[in-house]
Image 1 (cartoon, helix red, strand yellow):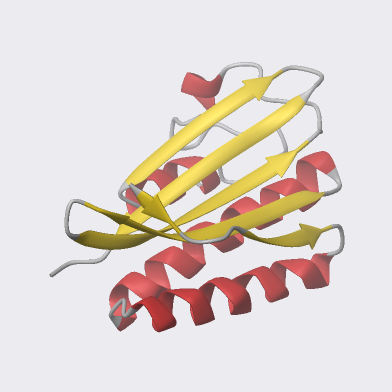
Image 2 (cartoon, rainbow, N blue to C red):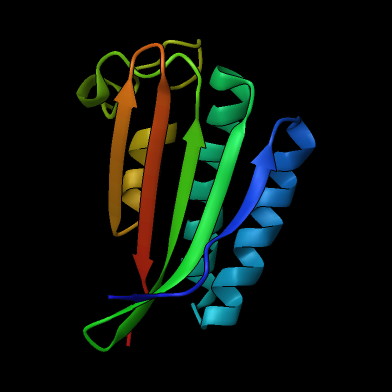
Amino acid sequence: MTTSTTTELVIQAESDIVAARRTVREAAVRLGFGITDVTRIVTAASELARNIFKYAGEGVMRWRYLEAGGRSGIEIQFVDHGPGIEDVNRALEEGYSTGGGLGMGLPGARRLMDELDIQSTVGQGTTVTLRKWRRS
């Protein structure tokens, strides 16, 4: 797999969620994703940026372009040093929320993207990695 240089955006204010959306939209358009996939990517990124702000207070969003096996895509990673997720499998269930929300953030992001990976340790933080591959 070939990857481009990783770029990073700090998320520590609500306005950074808007910046994350704009940044991911521009990156996905540059890579040649169609409008439907751009919308999916932006929506997933927005949900996870909001999760960082709401649950951890601050963190970073990193993104890079990917190429593998003749296809190209984008990888977006969200990293925080917040409270962590006690039960990742339960957090991926629609309707489950520890913060009073609708419980659609992580399950929604998983549905919108091609790949989702969560690494989380209670008391240390969470890393969520998303990938979307461009359709030929």
